[in-house]
Length: 180
Image (cartoon, rainbow, N blue to C red; front, side, top):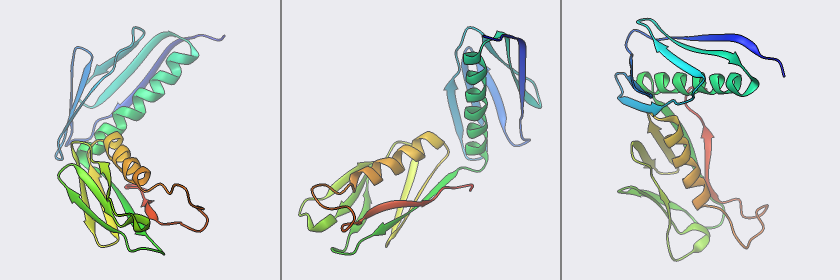
């Protein structure tokens, strides 16, 4: 395996975002809120300057190189989340029985799905805002993972069981991701 003697990557910090580090926890603050995440690896170091974040590693193997790429993606998502936020759009689709959706506390409620008498529920993760207006659903938040997991919970709650999915295409589906 080829070793790289030293690898150094930088991320530019926007003016309206502040980044601090306490032990192994990286704290990113912006106009939308604050995100914290632990970045811990014995060979990968994170250093914060006024304008940028430097991620360095010495005697790099393939796994450390991949880990540095992962760290960069997470930090960029944190910066984007606290400055812009993430917004996913979903649509309720039905052809057999009209589906009624609503939000009750930290639960997303799907009623009359395929004519079922009992409602189906999907968990809304803390820090995520869900709005249901007619057939359109908007999921917003600053943490990309929490927003994506909430969308996945809603899609999973409307999985069709014991029927031919080519005929019964009813459900709640993601139609767009924010920022794309």
